[in-house]
Amino acid sequence: MQYMLIFAESEIDFAKRDDPAEAPAYWGAWNAYISAMRSAGVIVSGEGLQPPHTATTVRLRNGERLVHDGPYADSKEALGGFFVIEARDLDGALEWAAQSPAALYGSVEVRPTLPPPPEAA
Amino acid sequence: MTQDTRRSAEAAARSSYGRLLALLAVSARDLAAAEDALAEAFVAALRSWPEKGVPDNPEAWLLTVAQREVGRVRRHGGVRAAAAATLETLYRESAERTDSLPDRRLALLFVCAHPAIDEAIRTPLMLQTVLGLDAARIADAFLVAPTTMSQRLVRAKNKIRATGIRFAEPGPEDLPGRLEAVLDAIYAAYGAGWDALPGAEGEIAGFTSEAIFLARLLVNLLPAAPEAKGLLALMLYCEARAPARRGAEGGFVPLAEQDPARWSREAIVEAEALLREAAQAKQFGRYQCEAAIQSLHVQRGITGRGHWHALLALYDLLAERAPSLGALVAGAAVRAEAGQPVAALAALDALPAKRVEHYQPYWVTRTHILSRLGLDSLEARTKALSLTRDPAVRAHLEVR
Image (cartoon, rainbow over all chains, first blue to last red; front, side, top):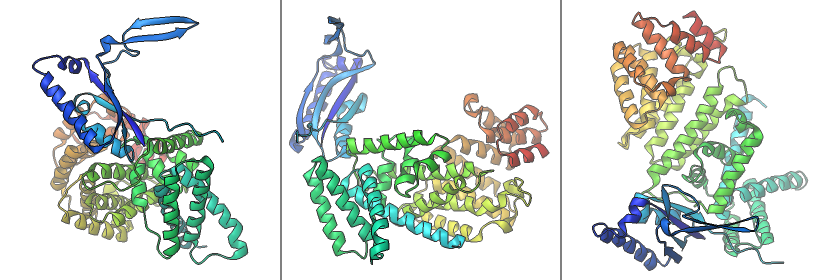
């Protein structure tokens, strides 16, 4: 099965990325995590994301395009990145989620991806 | 059929249902599909057995039919050829070894109490899947509408399938955490039966024996887990005293006034043995602690010796490990008996008002300690009475 690991980080965590004192540890932890997943061959795809202040949200209402600054939901933690991984079961996916740096200071949501739609008979 | 024969027939059916469902669910990794297939197999048995006679191994027969049914539904849905292959293997294996079916109920228990499953539905899920109880009966004991309970159970099973929760026993490293959830869910089943006991008759009162069945099963499947033995011992001590909780006219009899001759000796002996075995593992835990407390209460009934200080020490340990409201209030009651009523009252005062507001044992204990200290207990007594639903317990409190 495939699962998406959705990493949520706080504003403080996002700030670590560019803080000379914090950045080496921050990126070191992520690099170690990603290479562990890569050598296990579980990664299907994945990206890190720029901080939530770079987000722009679009909605179409009554034919009108509403664009506003910021992420779709304002919350303490924001989406920092994701991976889609191949795992035998939920427990296998949770194992990888628990090893991520985000599990230590933020949170990781684990969700199975939708299986491909059934073929037309 | 006598009561005993009926009970053993029920136990056999229950045991068989859980075994078959566990085998099916583990291979299909889908509880809902396994349940549907097993139901189909039972229907097929009702059609076929009266005509062709009962097969030599009814369980293997049911399993084979149910496995075909899972396979049929799978092929129909056009999904997962791999799972179908697993089923084929299992089907061949079971056909070869029809005499003894492997017991996978432990994996099933762990799926039901998986951390990804809402805590409130774990116990109902166990009662339904491992014991085959119907949703309406479970709903009664958990005080929700049958349709609500069915919906919650369906939702939980959907989550198990959709998220691909592992159908296997957890490894040694995550066993302690996962086992605790299983134990808690079994104890909750016992609680649901016990709470319903006063005044309730027949059906609802039955969950205590279901919980004991599950705990016994767990002890058999995980003989190295001392906490499983602790839980079984704890429930057996409580069961042993159940007949003595009511007087000749149905009135409530508190522990201190119970006639030990009316306690079940058999249950106490079994509980004591379990607790001793558990202690040999030298891994003390919450359930062993609670069982040890019950053991002392039982000894007091038999020998007349209070053991209040030993009890107090155990309650302090329990408060560290599992500071439930029940444990803290009972600990305060024991503190008062151990000759420290002032400290006992202080312990009650320290509990947050919001948590104790509707907790009947708190107000009963408070009444008791206040009158012991010669203080005004009218308010606490009134509150205790207003929270007591069981008429026999009310009558007991009013007399006092």
